[in-house]
Image (tube, rainbow, N blue to C red):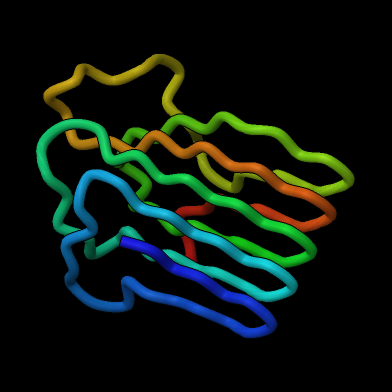
Length: 113
């Protein structure tokens, strides 16, 4: 599943949806928002790759869902407004593994809209 915002805004996940095992969010001089609060995840880890260049990306997760965050920010901001998992959850648990790259942009993970 891909969510791309180039010179505009792209958002999905406002209702029940099935993201699959790999999700891409790309914002180039635009905005990308993904809401996982009503997502029907498959068992195991769902990998989310987020690339933000001169834009804004936001990922909304349920507070009880384990999530890990890795990545690189160059002249950008990466922030979390929720508690991330302290260790990698078991491979059978539903969880998010978020990898982000930010170049002169903003990335945020939160549990509120």
